[in-house]
Amino acid sequence: MLTPDETAALALSLRVAAISVIVSLPFALALAWLLSRRRVPGRALIEALLFLPLTLPPVVTGYALLVLFGRNGAIGQWLAAVGIVFAFRWTGAVLAAAVMGFPLLVLSIRVAFDNVDRRLERAAETLGAGAWRRFLTIVLPLSSGGILAGCVLAFARAFGEFGATISFVSNIPGQTRTLPIAIYELMSVPGGEAGVQRLTVVAFVVALAATLIAALLGGALWRRRTDD
Image (cartoon, rainbow, N blue to C red):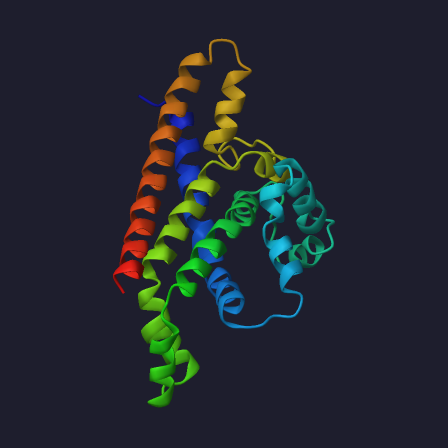
């Protein structure tokens, strides 16, 4: 049985992960479509920057977010002027989670787009369907499994995010203390072993369920591709 503080940390992690995926999805769809369907100048640089959050230490990513989106940051000071604050707020935890999960989301969607038979799009084009109509009626429905798999993977990555989050928004009870941060805090508190074990089990169950769902969706996409 989780304590009220542990329940609050779990609820915050679930909310942060879900919102981060929702916010990231439109940008991920656009970028994945560009990488899949267009010859983009500087493609190698774009892909390198895309996967940078996965190769950099998360603490470095969190520090970069603080420099950019802190109250005195290059972008944060302009956002603060209109009442939008990320640093040391739960919204900052969403931003950090979104940045860390974005590469997985884009990669999964791009693979799904690549697996769509281009002949279907060309046939629709000859029948007068515009780019938006082809995307909405052909590419998007046929890529739905990969898109959902990407969302699940990004959710799992965001749910388990720790380094960038604690560097950017710190550990504020009820505001930025996500489940991974709560586990880290309990590990340094005498007598916190029971809480660590409870939260670890919860984290394991969520991660296992997410990866299982992603694997099933990915497998369905692959089977449909091979059947075609």
